[in-house]
Image (spheres, each protein chain N blue to C red):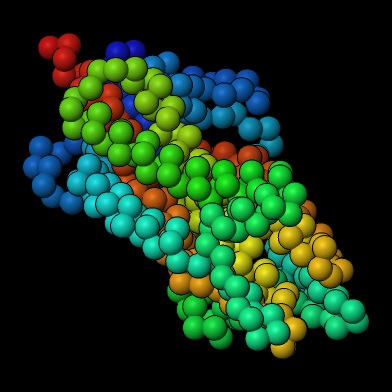
Length: 209
Length: 201
């Protein structure tokens, strides 16, 4: 029973409970899974254009996320603002290397890599690429799994804001950069969910005929 | 060929015949390697027990002191939700909502949803709207980020360590254990058990 896909067999696989149902001929009717009630579709609806829209929005937000301060410390009347990168530099200067690496990885490398990988996957699907589908699927799986860890910087800001409230001595304010950064993380998570990895494989299918 | 004995890979759509596998074993897609299903040992009982433990820890984590910040005798006491409230007061409403949802609301709803699903099943009953409730719990999965929050706590503590004394409260320990319990609950739950109970319409 190998070698055939559900789509080829006119079967729809429910994305929520996994039940296979027979595709009805008039496929423009919105079908629901007979078991769990989730909307049924052979592939995620408009996966490529929706993912593109989200990715482009994320690229746009990525710029203010990195340029604007994520938080500012006010101490004795003086205010010092930190962007994501200057926060990393602060840690390096103070000798906190492991922490600097962690934040650099979670806040800079992961979001950038995620955007690049999703962009590449979209282009490869649109160009009907046959190149290493297993590895591309794996790339997608990793992207989907690691995205959440970028939120760590947002939580650090939240915790610092809560803890450092010493009146004139020191207070910490969240900055606009944090809003854009959180938006990038949330939008790229949606983008990863909207992308349908089965599109990578559909090209291989149609070629055999 | 019954449709129930077949399953499609959710990542590449290849059809596979469902075969019984040993406890603890994993069935993977032969083409792309995605996990198709896992056979869990005593799935229902274990997940239910972990869910109940999780709910108790959740209440403790949200009510008891979380972190205290002690700088030359000037002490700031916080609970889990303090940061959210402060962000809100600073006008960062969107940010406050994202943090509130991902660190408190989503894990809470997931735990209650699991209890609602599993407790009646343990007694041999099917709760009303089972499919809808479990589908919702399943869809929330990526948005509970307590483990990322815990990493955020560690980073903050190290950052502030040179400047003041940080006193961990009871809530932080239950928060840490809650993450382990949630992960164990997710790992021990076999969704197929739930879907098998759902009546076809």
